[in-house]
Image (tube, rainbow, N blue to C red; front, side, top):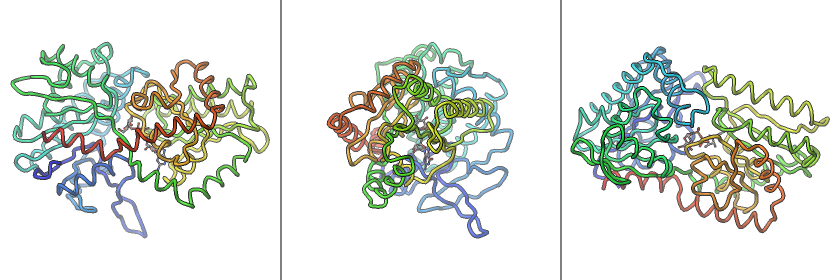
Length: 461
Ligand code: GDG
C-alpha cells in the first residue's frame, strides 16, 4: 500500500450527497462499489476526495465525513452543460461506446472541458503535499493527469478509465485526440477495464504522440508511463452476506409469490442508458412469446431501470423507445393479472435488488458496449444457492472474465439472443451449479478491494 504517501482521489462527483432529513441537511455516503472500494484506502491513508458536490451554485467549504476529507469543486450551470452533459456525455460517452449513437463535436464544449479539468487539477495541486499519490477517475477528467504533472512533477499520478477505450478507427474522429492522449500520458500509471482497452491506448499513444515502447510501458517526453488492465469489481462479501440472511429468503419468496409461483423469471437491472441493450433483450423476448417458445403463464421478464441523464434528449429518446416496446409487448401478450414484462423505473434499495437477483432464473446483461458491467458480478455474488444462469453480452468487460461460465451472446443478433435466453431457461440444475460456482470463484477472488489494492500497489511501485 501507499501507506507513507497521502492519497487523493479526484473524480467528477464527491462520494457523498446532501439529503434533507427532519428539516436539516445531512451528508450521506453514496452507495456503489467505487465509493466502498476507495473509502478504506482513503481512511488508511488519511485521504482526501476532490469532486463536484452535485449542487448548483453553492460555495461549499471542504468538510470531513466518516473519516474522509471531502473537497468540493464548484461547477456553474454553463460549465455543467459544456463539460458534463456536452463533452463528457454527448461527445466522449458515445465515442468510447462504439459510436452506438453519433458523438457530437462542439468546440465550445471542448473549451469548457479544458477549463473544468484545469480547475480540478488546480485544486489537487494546491492541496497535495510533496510526493502524495493522486488517483484520477474516469472520462470526465482525462486532461487532469497532464495538467497536474505540469504543476507538480513530484506527485505520483494514477488514472483509471471506467468505460471502454476505443480502437483507432473510432478514436481518430475526435478533433482533440492528441490533447486527450497527452492528458492521460501525464499519469505514471493508467488503468483500463480490459486488456483490449489498454492495447488500444498503447497503439494510439504510439501513433499520435510518437510514444515508444512495448505493451505496458511507454516512454514519452523523457518519462516512463505504465498502463495495464485492472478489471473493476464489486464488494462480493456485501452481496453474499445480504443474500444469506433469512430476510432475503423471505423477500425472494415474496417476489416469486407476487409474480406467480409457477413462472420462471428473467431479469434485467440497468441504468437507463442506450448502451445497455435493453431493447435487444425486449425484442428477443417478444420473439419468444410470438413463436410460443415461452408463454406468459410460465414466464415473466422483470426489467428495472434507474432514470439517468434525463436532461439529455438521447436519454429521453431511449426511455421512450424502451417504454414503447414494453407497452407493445404487454399489449399483445399480457393476460389479466399477468404482465409479460414487469417494468420498474426507479432506484430500488439494495436489499430489494439482491432479492430480485436471488429470484431470477435467468439474468440478462446485454449491453451493446460496456466498460465492465457490475450487475453481472452482483448477480453471481447474490447466489450462494449456486442456481440461476447469466446471459452476458460479449461486448462487456465482464465477459472477459466470465466467458466460460455465462452464456455469451451478441446483442445485435436478436435470434441468437432469443436462443440463448431459451437455453438459459432450460439449463439443467447441475449445469447451473457448475457455471455459478465458477462465476462466484472469479468474482470473490477479484473483488473491488483487490482491484483498488492492485492499482494502488502498482502505482506505488
Ligand atoms: C460505469 C461503466 C462499469 C442499478 N439499478 C439499481 C442499482 N443499480 C446499480 C447496480 C450496479 C450499478 O448500478 C450499475 O453498474 P454498471 O457497471 O452496470 O454501470 P454504469 O453505471 O454504466 O458504470 C461500467 C462501472 O462504471 C464501474 O467501473 O462497470 O461499465 O459504464 O452496481 O447494482 N442500485 C440500486 N438500486 C437500483 O435500482 N441500489
